[in-house]
Image 1: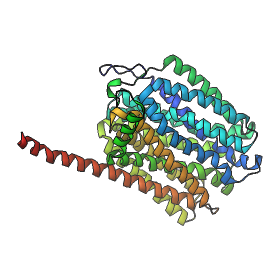
Image 2: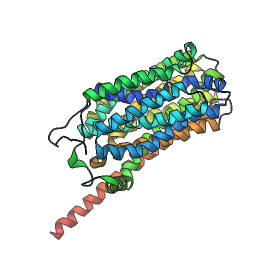
Image 3: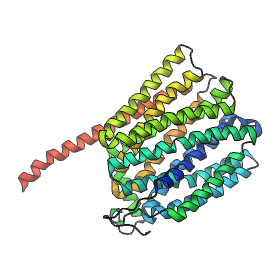
Image 4: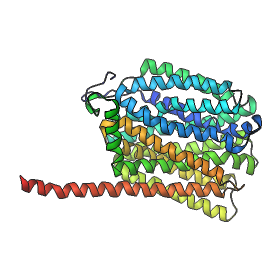
Length: 418
């Protein structure tokens, strides 16, 4: 077990380092997207095969977080994150040098293993250091600033593809990863508190106890699925947008990349609202507002598609509304899920991240499978995921209310027995 602080003194990692670390993992997904059409030609392949470098990345992160979370609970946040950054660096170099599409896909899978730590550990560290509503606020600030980096990475990726080729993006990721790893060695504290750990010695028994505790909680499952389906709409857009914008609308990769800056503004604005008002308004109101905005955006897409009015504005204007809602809902859903059982915050963060990527991967694949040369399959997938996010939140709320009512009913009986 890594050194830990006492309950009375909570260590907190520098927020700028948490932002940079999380942005690295997210950017490793996004900087690759503008290169996808070029990879089809470069390796004489097809869209579905190239898309494996994206979807398998998400599948690996989904599975890897199930392992990374318990490791962070047992061995500490700092040690787990540093190991993940080393793996990330090695894999990124492999991607940059890959002579074939098969090796590139393999490198992306290993890269995703390292990226797991950038997601799980940061969320667990925030929960270690702050209470529920305050954690939602801090996560809002982190995602607000972090949203700019993935969008910039898409824009940068489009520029690099046109000027230097698809390998340049991986070189940039390797340089950024090395700088963040060095900063983590120097600045990252251990935030895990031993008194909140399940089990005296950790190991498989503690891992099993953590998973059982969380998966048997409808409240946790509901919040985790709410987050997963909310982000699933964004992942679907990431998979379908490059082929719609470049192929269907005839825009360049640079134009595609720059258009994502608008999405960054929308997402970071929503995260800013979450950061400012989560403590004051409460997690439930923020999630309701965010999911309602996403559903409104999907309705606007369906109307525009029916009217044949899908161009760049018709595509991106509703998307800005959707990601604004995501920016409000997601930090609150994360904080709610990982606060259900503080003794297993790392495992909860891993399960939440797993659910997020496990929904994102099939959402992305569904866009490719349903592709008919129009924008309609993308809109359908995004609408379905947004509706399911709202239903998952309803599950969490109703389960929480039922549990609260059951506890209130048992209290008088217990008092009478005494």
